[in-house]
Amino acid sequence: MDRIPILKFGRSLLVTIQVDMHDQLAMMLQDDLTSRLVKERARGVLIDISALEIVDSFMGRVLNNIAAMAKILDAVTVVVGMRPAVAITLVELGLDLPGVKTALNVERGMDLIRASIEEEHSAADVDTDSD
Amino acid sequence: MDRIPILKFGRSLLVTIQVDMHDQLAMMLQDDLTSRLVKERARGVLIDISALEIVDSFMGRVLNNIAAMAKILDAVTVVVGMRPAVAITLVELGLDLPGVKTALNVERGMDLIRASIEEEHSAADVDTDSD
Image (cartoon, rainbow over all chains, first blue to last red; front, side, top):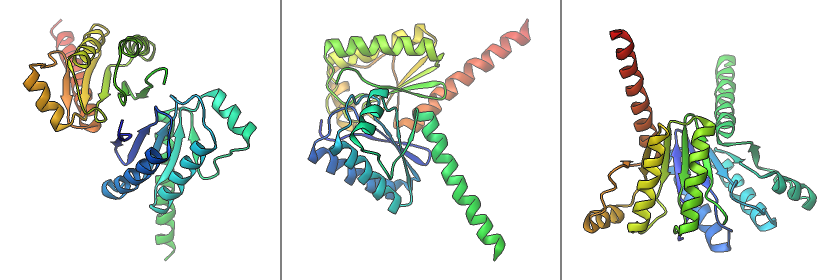
């Protein structure tokens, strides 16, 4: 496989990670994702990791990097579909994915993205009102 | 990778095929998809093949089988994200995917599924009215 496909849903981009990441694939995913974020004017990134049995420190760093890049481009990153065993391992390893929000499944992740977009909008409204 | 993840979106299931299919993986996908269709009462199956550079006769048969199974379980199957080169090859090989609907991307595929559910609903309404 040459690259991980990125699907557009409304104002969000969805990535399903099904294979173990290596350096080059991770770099390409970051490149593709950031350029798609700009091109599609997306506000959210959903990363489904339900296929992953292990999230190691490299994978954790990739997820954190993606979230940090997306944040600079004004998008929220939500990781969904984490297996229970992966959650246990992450905590045991002390990898707490600081910049990443999580949700149980894609639908809840979408809701989370929608909520954070609306929150910003209403915050912007309040700003405008107070002027 | 042990199996291909299936994501639920509203009343549709989404599958992103990123790796070359082999017999066992295809069988498992069919098993998982049919049981999820029943469990989630889904009405549509979206299969994204944007990562595939080649769709050979085996893959074509897998897609046709999934569509046939989904149809029996009262769901529409839409294949999305086909690369131009894949479309050319399919026609040249005479593989016309008879039972499968196609759409350009996930959003259009979702619209197609929504439209066919609504069509059935309105057909059902007419039936009820005529009674």
